Amino acid sequence: MLKRLLGRVLSRIDGWVDRLYGSKWNPLYQSGALAVLCLAVMLVTGIYLILFYRIGAPYESIVRIDGQPWGGRWIRSLHRYAADLAVVAVFVHALRMFCQGRSWGPRALAWISGVFLVFLLYVCGLTGYVMVWDTHGQLLAAEGARLLDALPIFSEPISRAFAGADALPSAFFFMNLFLHIAVPVGIVIFLWLHVSRVARPVLLPPRPLLWVTTGLLTAAAIAVPAAFGPPADLLRLPGEVTLDIFYTFWLPWVHSAAPGVVWLAGVAAGTALLAVPLLTRPRTDRRPAPSHASTRLCTGCEQCYTDCPYDAIRMVDRTDDREGTVALVNPSACVSCGICAGSCAPMGVGPPGRTGRDQLGSVKAFVREHPGAGGDIVLVGCSRSAAGADGHYARRFLVSCAGNLHSSVVEYLVRSGARGVLVVACPSRDCWGREGPNWLVERLFHEREAELKARVDRRRVRVAHASAFDLWSLEAALGDFAHDLARLDQPAADDDVEVLAECELAGTAPPQDPPLPRAGRTAGS
Image: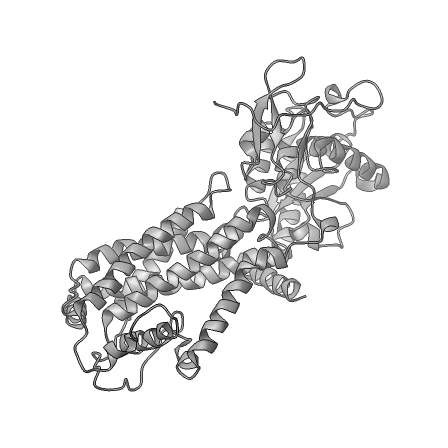
């Protein structure tokens, strides 16, 4: 219930932002890439700052850095603001993945590695605050020592180091500096693991959004430099301390709670986050079935292998009397997006009930049930887009993903007499199948296999991108398309439409596919 409610709220916000900026530049769709951008900015600015940092005089070195009017002050602020934005971007990214149901099955590894990435991000941020060694850093270090003392791992309480009897050793600041430098290495490793199950991962936002974000962060760093508190003094209790709402918002609660309660709450929260793939997994009867490749129909063209966004398909040697290779789907890696079905010209691969052949049968039934569709615009849309949300449009043919749509469906509708076919896809950076809208456009207009045949008048085919609650963009696209179609002659329906008849096999029941080997030569080996 909570997941559904959050999903609807998030979808409505997407629609509002799409209307304001356009779906192509919606920063909410780029949350993961923006987090990586912030990490890159933190890395570049951190290299500069580390050149002037001294572990023997941490606070004084920060004061000297802040006193550099042409460099240090705004670079330190940029480092700080990028770290704050990284937390916001990560939170939005995780919320989107949770609400869209993209956290279980083959995507569980991305979710679990993302939880560890958040933990490492916080470790990096907290050690950075301690390195400043103002009253904020002192409070943070003292609370951390109190929590660590509750664990039976140290022979002596480390809180004694902050009692003020002796000066803190340089080793303490060296340890924080080491962690602050070493943790980003772990972030890079887990980031690689985070995207290891996807093909062609996009790690950075589009250039315009990249430079605008970096420019806004830089402008904020110059206009409003990040402040820091008075120097730490172990002989005095920190007075009023300004906390960072992104990294140290939890300090007041921790300060008043017993260490055991804090550890219990932290372990419970971490366990709950790691258990999300299990908690959000649908019941067995509701899980979409993975794709299956027919060895009888597969020609070994490798297009499904190339287009699969999750590297769930590989090419193996055939075991029948034909030469070459055949596609083999790994069910444990397949998310059932159906993009492979749209890429297969002979319609021999795809999830059960959603192959090109299944879609062609469904669209034939659709034309029979909507005899008035001829001469009108037919809406073909992704079920997660605005086409799926707008139930008022009568002539509507839905597919699970825009990338799942086979070009033969569009051809059949046009040749059946439809005045135009408007294909509505999710925004390209928010596709549940990752690359569905991109491959759709390539197949319809740029002759990517399985391409829309040249005999189809492409003036009567258009693609629009509209999220679930972006009905404004859908209505605008419909209006513009209808205006352009008004300049064309009324299409005449073919008397006998046979789309891709060469793929129809003679006979009745097709023979069973021979079993495929579990191992074999992959494409390119």
